[in-house]
Length: 227
Image 1 (cartoon, rainbow, N blue to C red):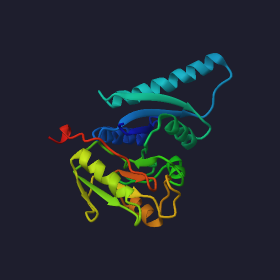
Image 2 (cartoon, helix red, strand yellow):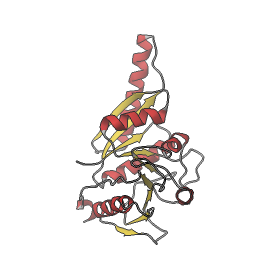
Image 3 (cartoon, rainbow, N blue to C red):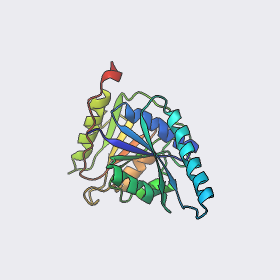
Image 4 (cartoon, helix red, strand yellow):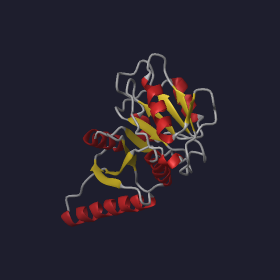
């Protein structure tokens, strides 16, 4: 089964970056769901219908930015954006949740949004973060920051590299995507960052993918785009 990524989207510039990262992941055979989290519903039926229509129109505009890609759209109602996205990830058996960086992030750098930060402490799905002002790009080199005793991070990075037709490296600083493992103390199947990993992410100039401890994400062999 192809891996699935949920893109958190509310039409901000950072979410436009997340869309572009979604396009990049789609090149590795990842199926995409575009999700908008509403924080409440209205008791007035007419106003509620308008709010729902506005939310769906917002997602439709986001889907149009993805061009010809086949993408699902979902409106989620939850008082908390991360909780709503996690619930959707469980419903769809999604492997990855994709975010843009914080709105104050300098171009080309990575910084988790507030909602992203909460998922970096306990998410059962991998978390991907796009740099500010990110443009879809070909992935030629993939870096990996793994934790001793957890081979799943390397296995995920290797599968992703095979799908992109990219080289996998643990030494190159200039990479097109960085795969980061969760800390040794993390519960099995959950994301949790070490201080070293946090520093690496803050210094990254490419998208990062943080995977749960002990979980390998398998990507299909999609090599046509590498020809």
